[in-house]
Length: 328
Image 1 (cartoon, helix red, strand yellow):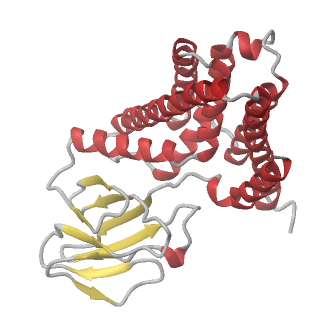
Image 2: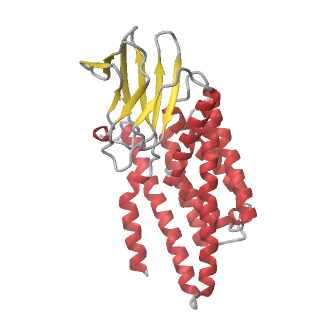
Image 3: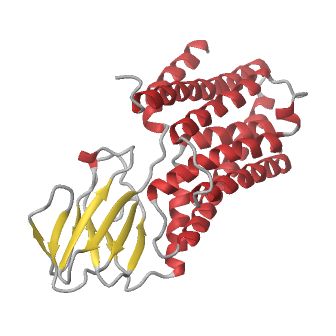
């Protein structure tokens, strides 16, 4: 049993750097330079290497011109109506967020889900398209953010029942909604690297409390309070992702609302599935003759979570000093 747990720890630790960072969408900036000339610039998220970027091209009557240092240049007799998205070299194709800016001052923000082969440019940006687009980004962000999911898994293991889990997750939601809003509106500014490191440390903290199993402590008695406090922290992480993506140019508040709704929707799906699995495992453990096996299996799983969180904390803390120039 110990060998199995150790093998899982090693495997997850080795995979941690890739899984720790959320899969942010690929940003495509389309700019109209003059009446017939357009340029495309792509901004890759940190988890996607440039050589794995999909090939983004303008379709229709557009002719590609010699590219500049950063942008692809096109000559189009009329306004483009569609972008073609080539295959990505990554294991999973990223979502696409197109930000278009036209010579007449008009601006558009359009999203395409992962694996899309094309993206249509609407004639105008609508409230519904912005809201739905950022809801999709929020859902994709939370469901691919392994650090946030591991934290939620710990909350589910602490709360256990449907009622306590609902109250606990509501506290977490209120906490992160507050800081997402404040940070996105520029009312709060923090070091994103430090926030990511402390988010990893929050996973270690909850995992340690679960292994310790002291149900008289505040974490088990009032999980909603702990979830709300840590929700403020995780909200800063969500806000950092949203700010790196950017909001819709014409409807920033609607972008923020949609992103919050998407994060909440994805979170609820994950929590519901996690709680069902916890209940299923509890019933299964009750049928096993040796309850010690179930106890050790649970502690082993929690130890894996805590170890991965600790690995991320060290990795992200070192990254703060490395990126800041302290380590060459």
